[in-house]
Image 1 (cartoon, rainbow, N blue to C red):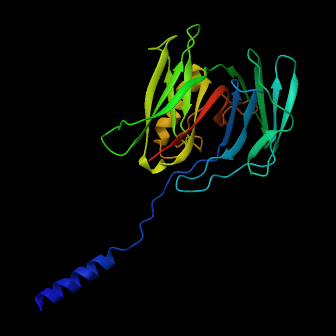
Image 2 (spheres, rainbow, N blue to C red):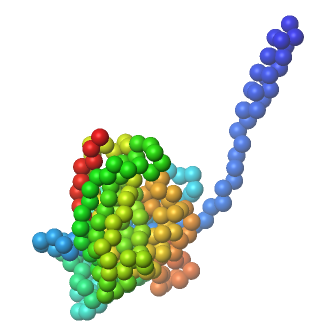
Length: 270
């Protein structure tokens, strides 16, 4: 009988602990997030540019949905001749694409303008050079003796300049690298995937970036923990190179970047 009483008391205690606990999470006015990233495939014939301008706003911490922004005026100005390339919202909400070809040239500065709800946001960027990928091959090494999948990436650094690179390993996996220890030399390194990507085609890219974007993305990547897309709204207010010229205190998040890019496809086997 004592055991039954004890059991009933324990069940009653657990039931009484099921009260809902409400946690007050600090909220702030939403900020505009401008992700304007362009990849210039300089090593292909013909040279092409991919990318667009994604407009979103920040959301409360526990919200899963990222609010998109419609109705903005978006354009890029070629500062060498004041040519304007307009961007219009595509069928994907919040994504603005060029209405005419946008082919950034080396040595030219481009100014991004976004006008939204009475505020004007601007940023300036230039095409940052990269080098081609020499080779990508599958290795047989593992990171911790497990079932990771190794790829070995080879490229040759340009010794005439200081280079910063951003490697895109598909699946929202990124690695920023600087050439401090291999200036002007051939270089290779290993990258490890989880074993769940066997028999899949992956596209590996090398992007040229400047030092400011390199530092920005390094922090952004660290905040994301490589468990999600770092280009989603950052978990903290990491400021990029875009300013609000109308109301400076209402600064946006995000970045305007133009990278020379090379890509290499490889099928990972079992």
